[in-house]
Image (cartoon, rainbow, N blue to C red; front, side, top):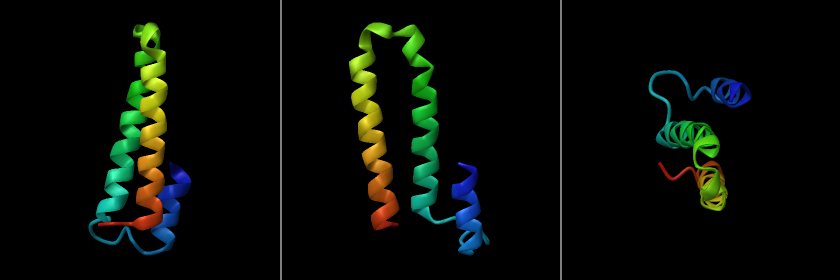
Length: 69
């Protein structure tokens, strides 16, 4: 997380409002971290959470490569 913010700063993308793709990646990161807490509570649904993590990872990769907005 820290290196990503440092990269955005070095590219000059943090002056003013960050780009939409960076905001979306941060939101997906928060969803990922929040879903880790669900593992202890819903241990039977671990396969659903693993699938969700894979989809979140794919979404962040698409945002990083394509920068759609």
